[in-house]
Amino acid sequence: MTAFAGMTWLNPPALALDTPEGLAVTTAPHTDFWRETHYGFVRHSGHALLHPVTGDFSAEVTVRGDYQALYDQAGLMFLLDEEHWIKAGIEVTDGRAVFSTVVTNGRSDWATMPLPFAASPVRLRLTRHDTAIRIQVANPDGGWIMARLAYMPLRDPARVGPMACSPERGGFTARFSDYLCGPAIPRALHE
Image 1 (cartoon, rainbow, N blue to C red):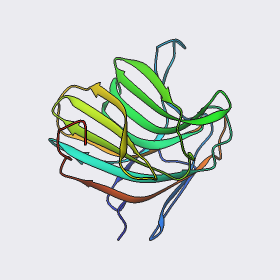
Image 2: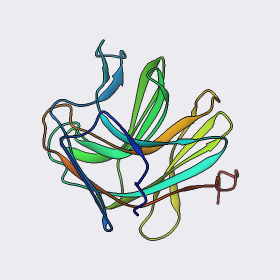
Image 3: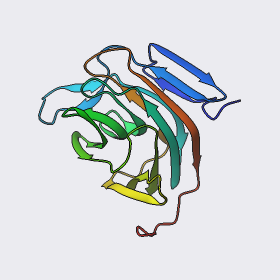
């Protein structure tokens, strides 16, 4: 049994292979998660393999992707409902892969962060402490870099798991491995 067994797809992808080495996801065309801001549209068609969580927790995954087209993206998703969610991971924008977070509380808010190391593979972590969601990316030289601290209403159950989208095309492939979800890391922000 793999780390992804028992999880449920929100919008199944074109192809998903769950093997002992990890989960390979190939996106369907024009898939995304977004709400209103700047573009004026709502998209809730991205692929996310989710499981329920309650209370405080930390989820981690290693992501590899063949990032090529604008907005190709892969990472973790935290979902309460269609108007309250977070996606975080690697995304292509302005011709390069960056660390990206979208926080949606009714409307989406997007932030990007250049990485001082290769964008694939990347290990990321999402932690909930009450109404605070902390998003971190692992530094290959050791330690974690905080990418975002965001508000999200405290409702249970929530759902969390790997996410992949390709708003401009289909056929983007992302690979997820070493998925963990368990008790929250300590609350202190500065390790």
